[in-house]
Image 1 (cartoon, rainbow, N blue to C red):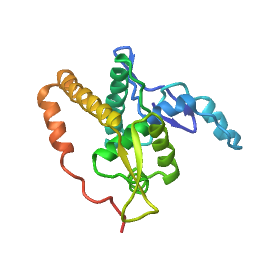
Image 2: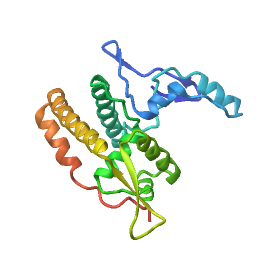
Image 3: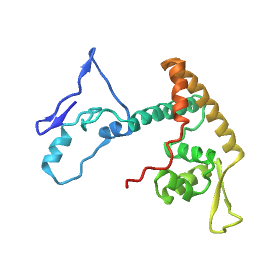
Image 4: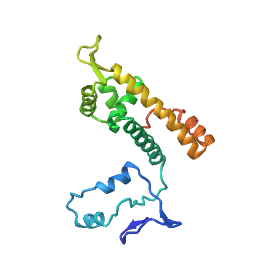
Length: 199
């Protein structure tokens, strides 16, 4: 679709089907509540329909495409956990476990990596502590700091999630082809390096 001074046009439909990208941005339009004072902006927002996309003048970027895959894996994992009678994880809770697996075990380190506040990480960690999946241990070298560690139940949950994600990789290979899935993994295993800083 395209928008401008003439307003919103619906995205093109191919073979009678509207192609949707269920990224967090696209999903956000569904729940958007406009609170600004600009009447022209308000009129524009009110014309948006669910799943309509805004044309920013560039093709879908890699960040959006990667988020599509992240969302697919996360939602599929939650379905597997729910089917086995397990309580699902929020995305924030999943992110904490991913960071623990990568060696970041303090709220400060996790918050810095995710780009969120330490308070937000602590809230999520406390939820997992209440579920008996994590525990907080005072750092022997810095009494002001606490290490976030998985309990036995947390380790078992982590193993279940790892097994499910391995199976989902096989399912993805079945859907997009083994060669593409292998190439995707090889590409993503290449580190992009340090975060870009404009000069």
